[in-house]
Amino acid sequence: MPIIVNLDVMMAKRKMSLNELSEKVDITLSNLSILKTGKAKAVRFSTLEAICEALDCQPGDLLEYLRD
Image (tube, rainbow, N blue to C red; front, top):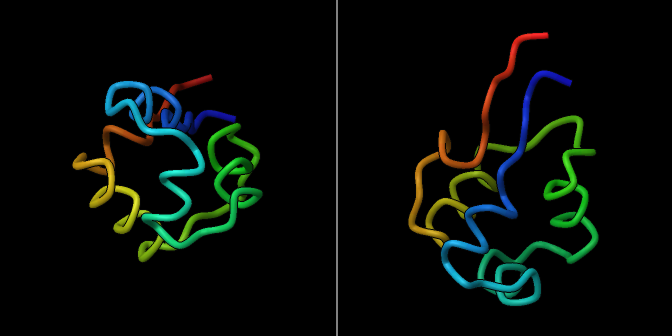
């Protein structure tokens, strides 16, 4: 998949655990885990906005496009 999710990288930079992010963003651990592992097929803009706010980052910090 050419879209890479760098959620784990941003969480590490902010020293934030999955549990803490889950509470701040009000998303279940399982849904965050699916996103973090890159297995998500889609992400809502409202979810992306909440994650960016919690991690103080931009969407481009979380998502990366790689050509095949």
